[in-house]
Image 1 (cartoon, rainbow, N blue to C red):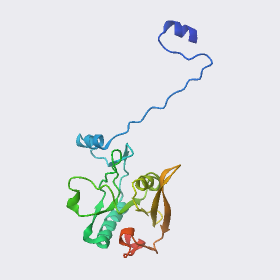
Image 2: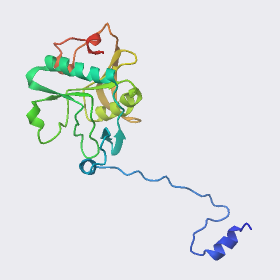
Image 3: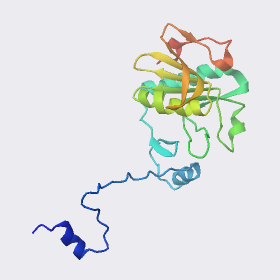
Image 4: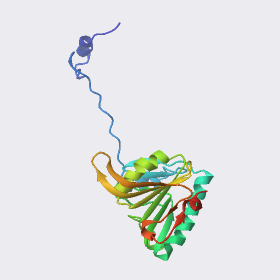
Amino acid sequence: MQQTTAEIKAYNPVIPFPAENEDIILEEPTKKKWTKNEYYRLAELGFFDGQRVELIEGEIIEMAAMKSPHITSVMILGEILREVFGKDFHVRTQGALDFGKNSQPEPDVAVVKGKIRDYADAHPKEGVLLVEVADTTIYKDRNFKSRLYAKNNIQDYWILNLKNRSLEVYRRPIRDKKLGFVYTEIQILTEKDSVAPLAALGAKIKVADILP
Protein backbone atom coordinates (compact mmCIF):
# COMPACT_ATOMS: atom_id res chain seq x y z
CA MET A 1 0.00 0.00 0.00
CA GLN A 2 1.38 3.41 -0.98
CA GLN A 3 1.92 5.85 1.90
CA THR A 4 1.28 9.58 1.80
CA THR A 5 3.89 12.13 2.86
CA ALA A 6 1.89 12.83 6.03
CA GLU A 7 1.92 9.14 6.97
CA ILE A 8 5.65 8.85 6.36
CA LYS A 9 6.24 11.93 8.54
CA ALA A 10 4.19 10.41 11.33
CA TYR A 11 6.30 7.26 11.40
CA ASN A 12 9.60 9.10 10.83
CA PRO A 13 9.39 12.36 12.79
CA VAL A 14 13.14 12.99 12.72
CA ILE A 15 13.39 13.05 8.91
CA PRO A 16 13.17 16.67 7.66
CA PHE A 17 10.64 16.58 4.83
CA PRO A 18 10.16 19.64 2.62
CA ALA A 19 6.85 21.45 2.57
CA GLU A 20 4.35 20.38 -0.09
CA ASN A 21 5.12 23.44 -2.24
CA GLU A 22 8.87 23.51 -1.54
CA ASP A 23 11.37 22.56 -4.23
CA ILE A 24 13.86 19.82 -3.41
CA ILE A 25 17.43 20.94 -4.13
CA LEU A 26 19.99 18.19 -4.55
CA GLU A 27 23.52 19.36 -3.83
CA GLU A 28 26.35 18.28 -6.11
CA PRO A 29 28.93 16.13 -4.34
CA THR A 30 32.16 17.98 -3.57
CA LYS A 31 35.23 16.62 -5.34
CA LYS A 32 38.30 15.91 -3.27
CA LYS A 33 41.16 18.26 -4.18
CA TRP A 34 44.41 16.38 -3.80
CA THR A 35 47.61 18.10 -2.73
CA LYS A 36 51.02 17.22 -4.09
CA ASN A 37 52.02 15.70 -0.73
CA GLU A 38 48.96 13.43 -0.76
CA TYR A 39 49.58 12.59 -4.41
CA TYR A 40 53.17 11.49 -3.85
CA ARG A 41 52.16 9.60 -0.71
CA LEU A 42 49.62 7.62 -2.74
CA ALA A 43 52.37 6.86 -5.25
CA GLU A 44 54.65 5.62 -2.45
CA LEU A 45 51.87 3.32 -1.23
CA GLY A 46 51.52 1.77 -4.68
CA PHE A 47 48.11 3.17 -5.63
CA PHE A 48 49.27 4.00 -9.16
CA ASP A 49 51.26 0.86 -9.93
CA GLY A 50 51.00 0.19 -13.65
CA GLN A 51 49.28 3.52 -14.33
CA ARG A 52 50.55 6.80 -15.75
CA VAL A 53 48.95 9.68 -13.89
CA GLU A 54 49.54 13.36 -13.18
CA LEU A 55 48.11 15.89 -10.73
CA ILE A 56 46.28 18.75 -12.45
CA GLU A 57 44.56 21.45 -10.35
CA GLY A 58 43.95 18.99 -7.51
CA GLU A 59 42.64 16.16 -9.72
CA ILE A 60 44.53 12.95 -10.40
CA ILE A 61 44.31 12.45 -14.16
CA GLU A 62 45.10 9.18 -15.91
CA MET A 63 47.37 9.71 -18.89
CA ALA A 64 46.73 8.04 -22.24
CA ALA A 65 48.75 5.02 -23.26
CA MET A 66 51.56 5.92 -25.65
CA LYS A 67 51.58 4.32 -29.07
CA SER A 68 54.75 3.93 -31.11
CA PRO A 69 54.46 7.25 -33.05
CA HIS A 70 54.02 9.13 -29.76
CA ILE A 71 57.10 7.60 -28.15
CA THR A 72 59.13 8.10 -31.32
CA SER A 73 58.20 11.79 -31.42
CA VAL A 74 59.18 12.29 -27.78
CA MET A 75 62.58 10.69 -28.39
CA ILE A 76 63.19 12.76 -31.55
CA LEU A 77 62.22 15.98 -29.77
CA GLY A 78 64.54 15.16 -26.90
CA GLU A 79 67.53 14.64 -29.20
CA ILE A 80 66.92 17.75 -31.32
CA LEU A 81 66.23 20.07 -28.39
CA ARG A 82 69.38 18.93 -26.57
CA GLU A 83 71.41 19.93 -29.62
CA VAL A 84 69.60 23.27 -29.93
CA PHE A 85 69.79 24.35 -26.28
CA GLY A 86 73.22 23.04 -25.35
CA LYS A 87 74.83 22.51 -21.97
CA ASP A 88 73.17 25.39 -20.10
CA PHE A 89 69.77 23.69 -20.30
CA HIS A 90 68.38 20.31 -19.34
CA VAL A 91 65.84 18.57 -21.60
CA ARG A 92 63.50 16.33 -19.60
CA THR A 93 61.19 13.76 -21.19
CA GLN A 94 58.00 12.91 -19.31
CA GLY A 95 59.25 14.24 -15.99
CA ALA A 96 57.14 16.13 -13.47
CA LEU A 97 57.12 19.88 -12.94
CA ASP A 98 56.29 21.41 -9.57
CA PHE A 99 53.52 23.95 -10.15
CA GLY A 100 52.70 24.26 -6.47
CA LYS A 101 50.32 22.60 -4.04
CA ASN A 102 47.77 21.21 -6.51
CA SER A 103 49.54 20.63 -9.84
CA GLN A 104 52.37 18.30 -10.81
CA PRO A 105 52.03 17.96 -14.59
CA GLU A 106 54.25 15.69 -16.68
CA PRO A 107 54.70 17.23 -20.14
CA ASP A 108 56.14 15.00 -22.82
CA VAL A 109 59.17 17.27 -23.15
CA ALA A 110 60.33 20.15 -20.93
CA VAL A 111 63.37 22.36 -21.43
CA VAL A 112 64.53 23.82 -18.12
CA LYS A 113 67.49 25.93 -17.07
CA GLY A 114 70.50 24.26 -15.49
CA LYS A 115 71.82 20.71 -15.43
CA ILE A 116 70.39 17.30 -14.55
CA ARG A 117 71.75 17.25 -11.00
CA ASP A 118 70.20 20.64 -10.23
CA TYR A 119 66.92 18.75 -9.88
CA ALA A 120 68.11 15.76 -7.87
CA ASP A 121 66.11 16.85 -4.81
CA ALA A 122 63.14 18.69 -6.33
CA HIS A 123 61.29 19.00 -9.62
CA PRO A 124 61.70 22.18 -11.71
CA LYS A 125 59.16 24.91 -11.01
CA GLU A 126 59.34 26.42 -14.49
CA GLY A 127 60.48 25.73 -18.03
CA VAL A 128 61.56 27.78 -21.04
CA LEU A 129 59.72 25.40 -23.39
CA LEU A 130 57.10 22.70 -22.82
CA VAL A 131 55.94 20.29 -25.51
CA GLU A 132 53.00 17.89 -25.55
CA VAL A 133 52.77 15.23 -28.25
CA ALA A 134 49.11 14.76 -29.15
CA ASP A 135 47.46 11.89 -30.95
CA THR A 136 44.40 11.11 -28.81
CA THR A 137 44.87 13.95 -26.29
CA ILE A 138 44.53 17.02 -28.49
CA TYR A 139 41.45 18.41 -26.67
CA LYS A 140 43.11 18.13 -23.26
CA ASP A 141 46.35 19.63 -24.51
CA ARG A 142 44.61 22.59 -26.19
CA ASN A 143 42.38 23.35 -23.24
CA PHE A 144 43.29 22.06 -19.77
CA LYS A 145 47.05 21.85 -20.31
CA SER A 146 47.14 25.14 -22.21
CA ARG A 147 45.39 27.05 -19.41
CA LEU A 148 47.54 25.39 -16.75
CA TYR A 149 50.76 26.31 -18.55
CA ALA A 150 49.55 29.86 -19.22
CA LYS A 151 48.65 30.19 -15.53
CA ASN A 152 52.20 29.22 -14.59
CA ASN A 153 53.72 31.71 -17.03
CA ILE A 154 55.15 29.22 -19.52
CA GLN A 155 56.08 31.56 -22.36
CA ASP A 156 56.61 28.91 -25.04
CA TYR A 157 54.24 25.92 -25.29
CA TRP A 158 54.07 23.58 -28.28
CA ILE A 159 51.63 20.85 -29.24
CA LEU A 160 52.96 18.39 -31.80
CA ASN A 161 49.75 17.29 -33.52
CA LEU A 162 50.42 13.83 -34.93
CA LYS A 163 47.01 13.46 -36.55
CA ASN A 164 47.33 16.65 -38.61
CA ARG A 165 51.12 16.44 -38.83
CA SER A 166 51.48 20.00 -37.64
CA LEU A 167 52.98 22.00 -34.78
CA GLU A 168 50.82 24.34 -32.70
CA VAL A 169 52.80 27.11 -31.01
CA TYR A 170 51.26 28.94 -28.02
CA ARG A 171 52.80 32.16 -26.68
CA ARG A 172 52.01 35.37 -24.76
CA PRO A 173 50.05 34.03 -21.75
CA ILE A 174 47.61 36.42 -20.04
CA ARG A 175 44.89 36.31 -17.41
CA ASP A 176 41.40 36.01 -18.94
CA LYS A 177 38.19 36.91 -17.06
CA LYS A 178 36.24 33.98 -18.48
CA LEU A 179 38.79 31.18 -18.85
CA GLY A 180 41.32 32.15 -16.17
CA PHE A 181 44.51 32.08 -18.23
CA VAL A 182 45.01 31.78 -21.99
CA TYR A 183 47.61 32.23 -24.71
CA THR A 184 47.00 35.21 -26.99
CA GLU A 185 49.37 34.16 -29.77
CA ILE A 186 48.73 30.82 -31.48
CA GLN A 187 50.46 29.65 -34.66
CA ILE A 188 49.74 26.49 -36.64
CA LEU A 189 52.84 25.35 -38.54
CA THR A 190 52.88 22.71 -41.28
CA GLU A 191 55.56 20.18 -42.18
CA LYS A 192 57.06 22.73 -44.58
CA ASP A 193 57.56 25.34 -41.84
CA SER A 194 60.31 25.91 -39.27
CA VAL A 195 60.13 27.12 -35.68
CA ALA A 196 62.56 28.95 -33.38
CA PRO A 197 62.19 28.43 -29.61
CA LEU A 198 61.87 31.71 -27.71
CA ALA A 199 64.83 30.78 -25.51
CA ALA A 200 66.96 29.84 -28.54
CA LEU A 201 65.93 32.29 -31.24
CA GLY A 202 69.05 31.67 -33.29
CA ALA A 203 67.95 28.09 -33.92
CA LYS A 204 65.61 26.91 -36.64
CA ILE A 205 63.87 23.57 -36.26
CA LYS A 206 62.03 22.07 -39.21
CA VAL A 207 58.60 20.76 -38.22
CA ALA A 208 59.12 17.77 -40.53
CA ASP A 209 62.22 16.83 -38.52
CA ILE A 210 60.30 16.39 -35.25
CA LEU A 211 57.45 14.35 -36.73
CA PRO A 212 57.68 10.54 -36.73
